[in-house]
Image (tube, rainbow, N blue to C red; front, side, top):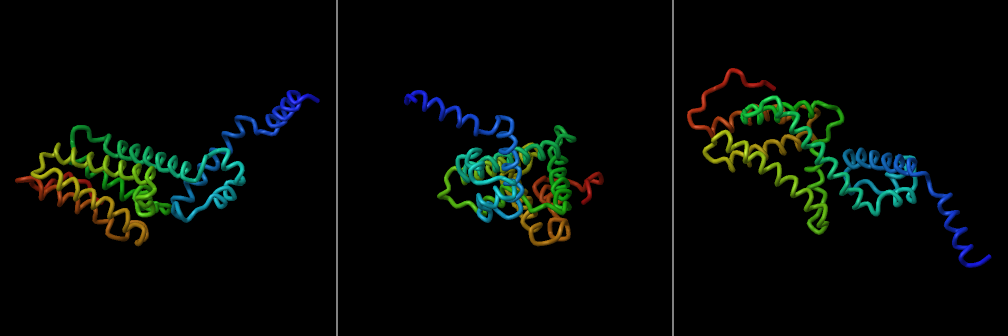
Length: 221
């Protein structure tokens, strides 16, 4: 057999051994969905490639066919969590166009609803911020960019409210929102300080709006 024929035979065998395109996609999806669940429940650094592959009913070879590295998988996980976060945000504020106060209140109402879910482990991006060190450049940059966008959104909402100091109000609301998620990790469901987050947000807004009177139509937690 010539070297050309031998190479052709090897190539044909490799193609025959390779999984079909659709099957490969399904394996990748299964690995990714499994990783998302494990990262959220146990943390990014607490879950290794072996555990992900085993839980997904796969193996390390299939893992590395699907993802170049664990960091590449984590990057995709964080981007998916960011996409879901903004979908949640837009869904919460959509009912109150051009009403920034009700939009802010709606975010805290929606956050409390999330906290009531048994599977809630807080904000995935905030959890990642605790784990990821500054030397993990791509991942830490992604998380910081997300949090910066949240901060800018809250600043913009505070400006729309005509707050005396929109940056201070926006930052205080962000502290309250992120702090609520962290207390959810300690206290079961909404039994902890997160239950008071809506009223605290309303008090913050009142304090930043000159002459703001009590509103009877405020949402209740």
